[in-house]
Image 1: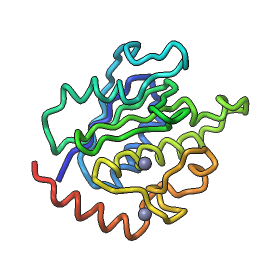
Image 2: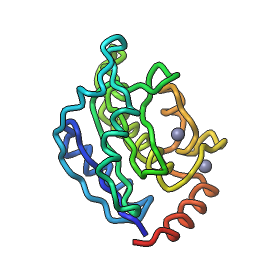
Image 3: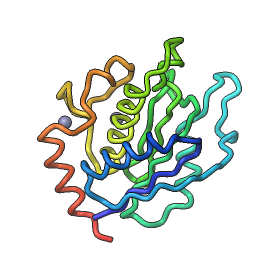
Image 4: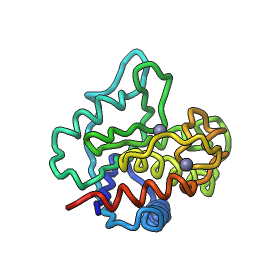
Length: 181
Ligand SMILES: [Zn+2]
Ligand SMILES: [Zn+2]
């Protein structure tokens, strides 16, 4: 078994956290700890792109991680990118067990639309579940509805479910059971 630790680098509403925690609890059936971690990430800021390097942020936090059975998810309200991509909703490194998601592009307001909290929470659930899925060694899935489907547009995120297809679920349960604390 493992343990999921969620680190909040930005303010996240309690309502959002309650829904996220319940969702992850149902899917992963593991202990979940949520930690507020106000930390400067300016070291990862790219002046030219006006975005933050997700890889730099992960690298920085991976230095402090020793327990292999712990899976870390950072949540930040900052626009993230990876080399070769214009932006990313999130990134995960299964080797270190550290992942990050960005809230910025999950908000309707980012696209000049009016706020939609229900949709926003759904998207957070999907992105968090997807990156944590990677941390439990799941790869991208071809099933269009599966949360492990790769999405690089909001349209694709909205189209998929916030949970695993039967095949991914089986692999996930197997992988979780392999982890020894
Ligand atoms: Zn992915
Ligand atoms: Zn799947």
